[in-house]
Image (cartoon, rainbow, N blue to C red; front, side, top):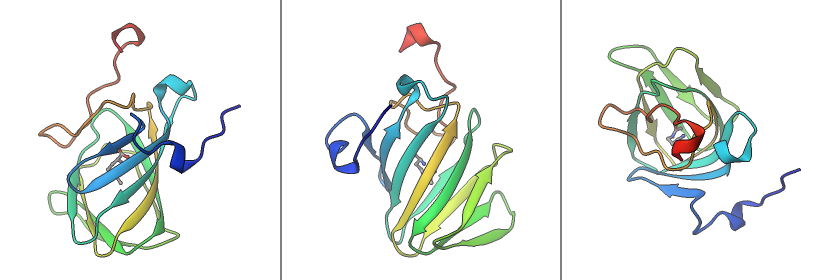
Length: 132
Ligand code: 9YT
C-alpha cells in the first residue's frame, strides 16, 4: 500500500512547476498503478492551453472558479468545485482560472514525472520502461 501526504511532495521531483501551474504528483508511472494522480493548482488570472495527444485525462475541480474551452472554437464550460471534465478524445483546450483552481488530475497512461508541455501543448508519449 502507498500512503502519501501532500507536504511530503514539496521540493521533490513529484512537485513540478510551470509558468501557470504547479502539479503535486501523488502517483506516477513508477508507482505501478497504471495511472498517475496529481493535485494541481492553476494560478488566478492565468490561461493554460493544452493538448494531451498521448494521454487521456480526467480533471476534478475541488477549489476555485474558471472555465474550459475546447479549441479552436469549441464550447466553453464553467468550472467550479464539483465539476469534472474528461478529455476522452485528446481534445485541444484552454483552461482559464478566474481564481486559483485546485484540480485533481488523473492521467492514463501515467506520466513519468519528467514531462513538460511541448510547444504543441502535449506531453510526449510514455517512454519504454528501460528509457526512464
Ligand atoms: C488541469 C491541467 O491539466 N493542468 C496542467 C497540469 C497537469 N494537469 C499536470 O501535469 O498535473
